[in-house]
Length: 177
Image (cartoon, rainbow, N blue to C red; front, side, top):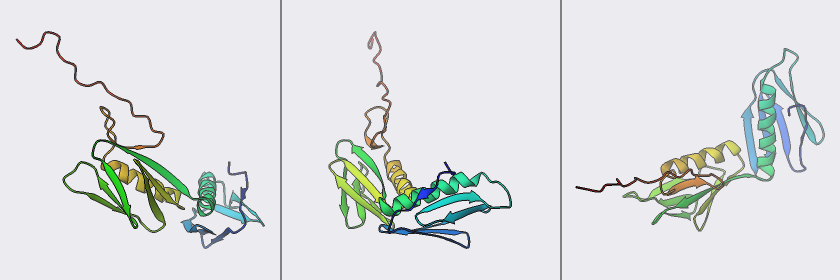
């Protein structure tokens, strides 16, 4: 994939100075420290990732993927959807904060870091942002608060995740004597 040049849409600027890759677009600005032995060649509306003259490295593909994700993040944005199921489990937003009632003795409040927004519709929580890594990390942290259990599938699950259900406890055949 690293041999394919990355198309840079209009309104997006890409700079690579002092081993720092910066992408700026309509949805924000992202920066990433590039690994050594990787170079980015910028043309008019595309960027190509190659290795430097020093030698070949395996990090060219990683850098290509990061640059591609950053360009998509500042133009379209990234999002993850969590589904919450269970009796009495609720999620609401207030400003940049996500308020969760997950069956504990106290409510849980999750504050969105800069660049992340929460949307709640019915039982679905959408986490949006321009940084793919940060969106995934926040979604994983929220899911870890109450992951879906294998018996009743109560708790958080990702939108297309399949929870393998287990059978409950089986009663003995003879009964109590």
